[in-house]
Length: 70
Length: 392
Image (cartoon, rainbow over all chains, first blue to last red):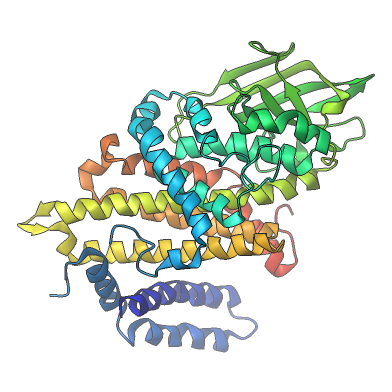
């Protein structure tokens, strides 16, 4: 669980930054709608399957041995 | 889980032989480097006196085979850099300059005779080496280097200045990069006589550094320094040869960034497991765990990246852009991890005795040397776009 949580949190954070940069880089030319769609859809990926915060707390519990979930 | 590589069982991806090298270096650092690292750092005193002890554990010369060199695998050589930095960035650079840059350039670009002439004594740390490429006016654009080597009979006459040269005032042998009469860039081995310096050579240690304070870097002046014609490294004929070599040494810098991050993470984790605030272990706070989780994620990703790079190196497929991407990513990630670790430890993180402040300051050097973050990004950018954006 903690390994999947770490991978999920770590991959979705730069994903969010990458689609943001790509959306900005495309600007109003090329395929702005496609870039904007990735930008919007990435937000769902960032939250579902365990939010970013939940994922890091699961990893945090594994590496410290102390739960900070509640 | 103090060791950040534990979560993903990363040691399973490394051979027992390479892990044995790692353990040897870790034990060496615990005995020789860590006990004096903070004091030397604070006093800005060189750690070159630790090189003979490092020579005894069979790591000198890195991946070079023969000539008394260690002949390590790329993974083991990377782990050496990681472990040295994990203990102390200054000693990591002292070792990197001598073993990686000076010995490495002779091993990569020298003829068999030249390797025979210099490498065995250097592998025993009986003679120390330095590497002179950067100049006062040419850092990132070192391709425009101005130091000249003029042929005069059986000798080359070197004139020019170098800056930021690690071990520059201590080394017995300095590999100096200069432009010859045809404008081609070559590497010339300046060898000082026993107990002195060659005529026309002078050095002044740069003071006031805020990072890696226990490796002394110098300004060097060459005023008509004469070296035998045979001291031009045979396979260093153009600047591309320097670039080829630097791509290799850049890989080691990516590994050392991981070492700084692992050290900072481990110190911070140990601290929060012991420290109590508001009646609770600091480790039990959500915002602390968020930082720790991101730190271990960064370390895991860096580890996988440098390991893949080393495997590509084994196959002869590690290109310059591959090294640049690893150096860029690892230095930037390690910088953030060291910052977070320092922050987690509050005021105590500001004290040298807790080590993490030293790593935070030292990782700044990692971020800049062997090609700045910006230069690495431009190299990767050129690779992925097919267009250079260095100059308009």
